[in-house]
Length: 280
Image 1 (cartoon, rainbow, N blue to C red):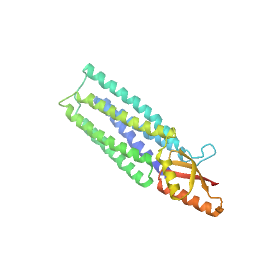
Image 2: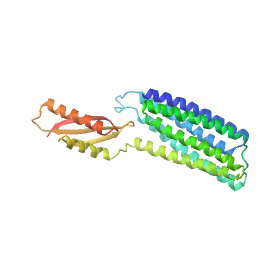
Image 3: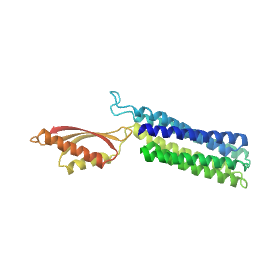
Image 4: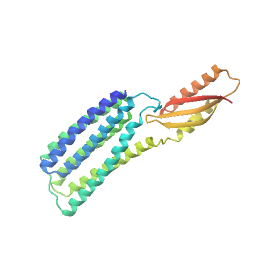
């Protein structure tokens, strides 16, 4: 499944790359600042998807002695790096927009650029549908996030089209639109940063531990030393189960197996449960 997800990311990266080239070239040739700004935005999307594609590769490796929980955190290291780039670029876009307003160098957008925006919207729509199909087939969280990102990009293309029309009457709408794109980039960067840093710092949902204790009580067993690790693709749980000393080995294993199965079923984010049995 993960190799299939990586293939979807590769195709999505190529689609975004084509979009970025079209926007940047058209923006420079026609002198359309909002297209240049969005071209930079889509260039960052190339970096995002490319980094995720590269970062997803090591996660295909099985666990080893140095990485007993697997290599899933590589993808979030990529996301963290890209988040920093996005937030820096958004600040640069805001500065450029403010400078253009102060200098008063604002021109009306050429109407011919509307055809370019229509082409861009078509490419974004293709990426959106492709990522949606990929998420349905693989269930990979990264594809789901990028699908939502593609929805925002489609709305962004529609916003640029509206900006082009309005700028024929109100030219100052151009730098305003650039700042709107920058605000979206900052929002996107913060989300990527928050999500990646939570995984990299092993932050967990505290409700997971309390849920484990609750499930154990339902099985009339005592658990202790519950440890939860964020592995990047879910939670790995280590715990100690205490059973009465008169239980046979078969009875103890049967109770533990049932407990582990119920934890996995009741908490979908749990990907593994490692249980140590001790006499009560």
